[in-house]
Length: 471
Image (cartoon, rainbow, N blue to C red; front, side, top):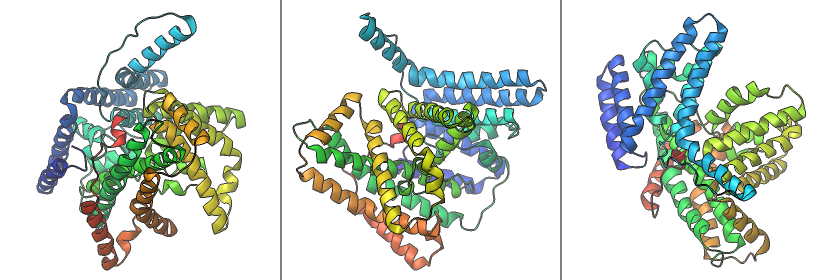
């Protein structure tokens, strides 16, 4: 049940109808059942994994709270980490590591052995809910949050369906109180939710799915059918595909949650306007980047040990962040590249952040860094390291004669994504992600009519699954 399907909106209509009729406790129980139904629609067998993580972390948190001995409490916390990362490791990384080790033995020692593989299906969204439950247990151990008093409330915190399979990765101190305490209608929730849902659907269907058609065609094309400039256009198309796709999911999740009185965190703040890698990660997938900062980078030592130790910590964090996205060497290379960007830019970060550049300089810095980010997307999108090399060799060593793909791709980016970027420029100048909801209704209506018109007219050739479902 993807957010861009008619089945989901039928499902949500039933959920919101029941939600309005029930008292607080009944709402929570109904939402938990709806969340399990929502997840089970992909593969009901994997509901067992969510149940295991839920029960283990609920019990462990209470043992940590009840244990005055910090050493013993640390062991309970370690148990939670072991169970959660163990499940994630088996289902997401076991085959990758055993296959890679087998190839290593074959390449360097000429030892041939069939790798031990499980060939299991990757449970949708496992990385998201695993990190969410881990943050809860660690925060209880650190004393930053109190254990949930009710198992069903905690289960809803883990499995709340709007953000279950692709985030944002919520912290317990933000989401749990909204679940435990009665929710009352708030002024602006419907209008803000409507804005988030419409812009989210626009970003997913009009931008991401149409960019996917261009991107997939260019990435799948053999070398003799496209040139270097076509490959560049394919990378740019993917940059807007992944942004529209992930922003669209996060925005719709926030919108439908607001209609139920629950405020999820914003996961994006105009990331392609960033001028440095640090600023980019404060704008892109904010819930993951802040999770990696708080539970990996800072425990490693953060920036407290001098330049080289800080770079080491950044590299470890981003390498593991790349591996979080997928069990493949292309994701490892993407994480390595992001870590290198952070290290290279680090001496200049404060100067960039504190400066007040002219408009021209700001545009140049933004354009330069946007292209650095797009280069990194090649590693993220490529199906193998060999494909990365194919793209780079064709971009660097083949002619740049424009083809139909070039003009069609660039035209589609400007026509479909251009108006959305103009909206973000306007939002950025007002420093308010919901600024459109505060203008006169006539202007809002015009924007919504345009979005709905585009949704009807520019249906993609083929609807694509949300990219982050695979993580």
